Image (cartoon, rainbow, N blue to C red):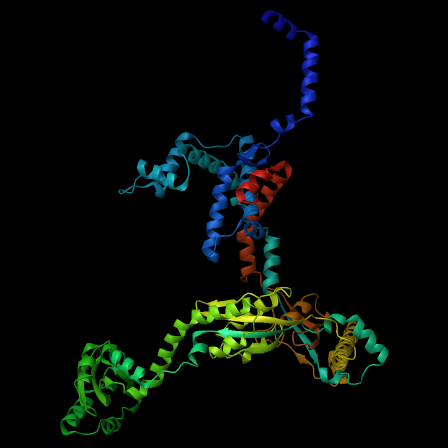
Length: 623
C-alpha cells in the first residue's frame, strides 16, 4: 500500500492536487505562518530579527535612566509619550541594518580576536588585574547575558565598528568651514534710528463702526474669566491652636521640664589685631601690664585698619585652640598677646555673656505656642472627623467650625488664585494646589473632595456657584476695546512710517535726513555679530535683520519692548580666515557622525522594516 502511495505521489495528478491544496490553504492563514513575526521577535529589518530579549535590555536601561533623572518609573503610556520605546527600537533597527551590510561585505571578527577583546575588557579583571573567568561569568549573569549571547553581541559590534571606521577620516569640506566661520565671526555696522512711540500714538477714539468691527475680529481678547464661588474651611494645627488656651501652670511646668533647652552657653565678643613689628609687640605687652585701654593702644600703634572683629563666639565655635584658650581665659575688657600662625597678635575680649538659663518670661510665648500646637495636633483628627460627618449629612460646616474656633471663608475665586491671599491659615505655596483642586471639582458632585496639603493640613470646600467664562459684550468691554484699538493704530502708524523710511532708503535717501524729518536722532552702531552688541544697544532682532542683506541693505525690526528700529547697513566686516569659531569647530567635530547617521538612514530606507505590534504592546504593558 505504501508503494502505491509513493507511486501516486510521483504522478502529475497528485502534484496538481497538492498545488491546489497549498493555494487553498494559503488563503486561510499560511502567510501568518511563514511571513508573520513570531512572539519572540519585536521587529525585522531586512533579514535581521530584533528579538524580544534584545529590545527588553535596551528599553529597560532607558526606563532606569529615566527613573534616575525624574525620580519616578514611567508607565507604558508615559514611556510611549516620551518616545522611549521608539528610541530603543530605532537604535536596534540601525544596528540591524549595519549588521546586514556587514554580512553582505563578509565582515566580522575571528574567534581569536573576540577572545583577545574579552581578555582586555577591564570589567572582567580579577584581583590581580588580569582576566578572571569567574568575574566574566558573574558580570554576564548580572547583566542578563549568556556567554554565547555576549560573544555574538561582541561579534556584531566588531562588524559595525569596521563599517564605522570608514567615516572616521571624513572631514568637513573647507567651504563649509568658511561658511560656519563667517556665520560666527562676520560683523556689521549700521546707522539706525528708533521710532519714538509717543510721536505715533493715536488718541482719538474710533467710530462706532470701526470699534464694532475691531471688537468682532478680536473677540477672543475680550472674555471674562471663569469664576467659582466657594466656601473654604482650612484645617491645620496652627488654625486650631489659635483658640486653645494654655494655663500659666502648664507653661511653668513645661519650662521646668525643658529647662536644659533654654540654657545659654557663655559667649564672648573677641577682637584681634596682628602685630607686625617687635615695637608693636612691646607696646601691647607693656600696655597689658599697665592696664591700659586696648583701643587706645591700637590708635597709638596706627593699627586701626588691621583690627579683626570676630563677633560674639562660643568656645565650641572657635577653630583655633590657642586663640580659644586665650580669649576664654581673659576677663571682660582685658587683652593679651599670643603667638599666631603668622606671627604675634593681640587678643581683646570686649564683652562677656555668661552662661545661664533664659528666664521664663523671655520664652513664655514660645512655650505657650508649642503647647497649643501639641494639643492642636491631638485635636486634629477629631475636628477632621466632625467636619466630614457634617458634610456627609449635608449639614452646614459653620457649626463645626465655630466649635473648633476655625474660620470659614467665602470667596469668588479665579484661576489666578489671588483671592486666596486673604486666607491666612493656608500654608506657604498651597494656593496653587487649592486653586487647581477647586477648578477641577465637578459642578455635579454633592460633596467635593477635601484638599490634602500635608500630613495634618487639609482644606475643605463647598462649590457654591460656577460662572463660566464667556465673551464680553461691546458695552462691557468698551474702554478696553478702545484702548486696544488705539494701541493697534499706534503700532500700525509706526510700522507704516518704518516701511516708508526703508523704501526711501532703498531709493537712495539719507537716513540722517529722513530722521530729521521725523524729529528723531539717528545713531551709528559699534560692530556687532548675529546676537547684537554686548551692551544690548543693538538687540538680536535688529541684528538678524541686518544680516539679511549686504552693505546698503535697509530694514526695520520690532524689539521685544515694542520699539521699531529702522536701520541701514553701513559696513560688512568679513571674518578673518584664521579666526576661531565655536560653530565651525562644533560642525566639524560632528560631521563624521552626521554622515554616518545619514548613511544608516539610507540603509534603513532600502530595507523593509516590520514591527510586531502585539509583541511590542505586551512588552510595554499596553495590552
